[in-house]
Amino acid sequence: MTHKGDFGEYGGTYVPETLIPALNELEKAYQAIAFSDDFQTKFRYYLRHYVGRQTPLYFAERMSAECGLKIYLKREDLNHTGAHKINNSLGQVLLAKQMGKTRIIAETGAGQHGVATATVCALLDMPCVVYMGAEDVERQSLNVYRMKTMGATVVPVESGSRTLVDATSAAIRDWMQTVEHTHYVIGSVVGPHPYPQMVRDFQSVIGEETKAQALEQLGSLPNYLVACVGGGSNAMGLFYPFLEDDVSFIAVEAAGEGESSDRHSLSLAKGTPGVLHGSKSSLLQSSQGHISMAHSVSAGLDYPGVGPELSFLRDEHKLILGSATDDEAISAMKWVARTEGIIPALETAHAFAYLKKQLDLSKGASVIVNCSGRGDKDMGTLMSYEH
Ligand SMILES: *Cc1c(COP(=O)(O)O)cnc(C)c1O
Image (cartoon, rainbow, N blue to C red; front, side):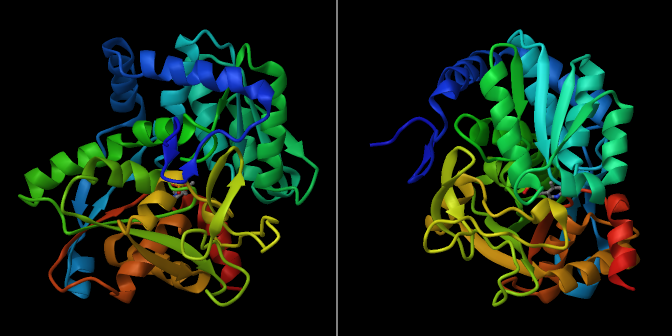
């Protein structure tokens, strides 16, 4: 038997009883509003005129020559705020407004999702509270200041490991008390139903554009789509419109200090089924079910879980799993910068590192890489890595 929001054995709604009415309301509103012409017209309007879509599909000439492949970059790094995350924040805040909600909360790790959400809240005049682990507040002071500049309140969370996992728990606690008037913007294809589906749908603008651009520029669909995977929203956004097509999907995770170390974020490659943040998925956990600490040099990939739909696609053998270590990602970042004059985000650099290794890819194949974000935010990390 399948339940609402299930992807095979994954997904579902594992939340405290008090949140069930809010999730039901959200699911109903999502189905009724998000597909209406009125909502879509507004969403597309802001995507075009505010976010700056559509983003180019760029043929990376020098990289292609070096790799013996036809490599195209989907330039999500050119979006306003520098990554794909704003597609989802915009969709969710527009939806919350139409639902009559008057307050937005979000959690953030490195701060990128917080910045995207604070940005859209400024645009649409919604009060915004962002929960962030106290450790992350210290490490990501620039993003904290960005959010504050745009009028958001940033709440440092002092409990537990003082990072994203604790910020998420704090946001859930807030929401349990404020559901009537507050919408919780989750930043990836994770969380209880309907979030994984809703975030995927808002991010699918990436794959929809890519498909039309590929047909126009390559004259055919590509052989491969490549994306880095943290929670999985840029990957699902790119892959989803191609699910019925003869295209291979490559999901690249962060191998951190190495596959055989304990310090990585390989929740698809090495995870086991379990429940985290409201849904069942493939997780990094001990045999007793304690969630493990994930590690990656890139904060956006440093999460012990992954979206339920990606776990499902993995089990269905629809994904090629790739990975890149911290060192490989850093070196790929410099490679892309010097070869194409594009500094990718460290997250994105993992996808490029995979290309550089040339695994699984036949010569001459056409490959589209989701260039999920730009690397300006990572210059500090790059500098400290080299010293
Ligand atoms: C947050 C982030 C990611 C990881 O999140 P997904 O949900 O897996 O897409 C990847 N790239 C960039 C640039 C990010 O900001």
